[in-house]
Image (cartoon, rainbow over all chains, first blue to last red):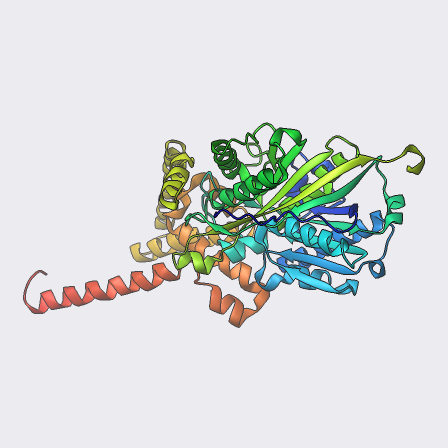
Length: 353
Length: 149
């Protein structure tokens, strides 16, 4: 982190609202503390009616986007771009899942930070030429286990610092169309007021069982740059939500920022900690995966913002930018943290239907 | 904080796997599996089979049960509790072969199951056989030199 004087916080050129969201979750997520807030879930075997886990994940992403569109009473023709990503090789979850929408599509990879990355880019696109953008990400425990760890049915023990890849998908629709305010349901309207892209930071962690420690320095760096540049204090926000550092990474984040004089602990929470009851559901350090922060954002966070419970929220999506191959070759795991600043404002009484 | 300090800090604060809980669990479950195997052995012995057949059938039964439980999606849950208790007996090896085969089924029988079935157990097989060959050579050489029986 050099002394870089260049200002990096980007403000969308127009007012960009989050006009709708869609959330889809698996059985374990449904059993968690946020279980009742999701639009769709699969009470059965997490296959969502599909013959393979990979197709199940694609289907989840499609369902999430469809739910978001339905919530805003829009159809796919009303979107200018789809921005989406997931954890599978070549981002096939998104590639196939959003195929049926017929909207220009930009595939993203930011590991578990992809939801924040998509919202950041979507807000900037809507702030310039785009009218509306759909952003979606997903993860599926079984596709991720197969690709990153062991076969799904392999029997082994996980270390306490390990995170659990969520079976979940979330989608949001961003809009710069002023009239879209009529499509909102809540008494508060939510805007993306600022964005700050993260720098990839390699803190030297080589343990795939402790991703929180690999990602926390990147999240701390982004937040620190944000606080410095904006001049705001952590205590002035209602919520600083990361996704997904889990228990281990969250503790490190608070420690690292405290050293630099920023006390985020009273305002901080993490999507990986919100999604599961870690003790009861044996989820070790908490949830992770592109779908974890997406589904928590698309349900719990945005819903509470629409009701005015949280009005000023910093969302920092955090990702571990490695592959099993690079880890086996002994390379350490770089992390990244992208920041999106969301604000909720009360709508004038007459506008609310 | 430089990388070295950070690595040390992260390793120091990371909670370790609770060996004090895991070891007794492994001991109990692993012991129960072995006791069950001994019971099978005694039962098969009553059938009047040769000792060699009895041993083989005991192993085969354990492998069958481990694979069956893997297929039913139960084995990983037992293993998450038992750790080395299910890993060390032949049940762990059976699960390590069956689970990638189940996963790879969707990619077909040749490039899926055929190519990926040993992704977990492969190292054990390769180095197990390799060590066997090495041991054999040493043994044969010593015998030829008139040392040992």
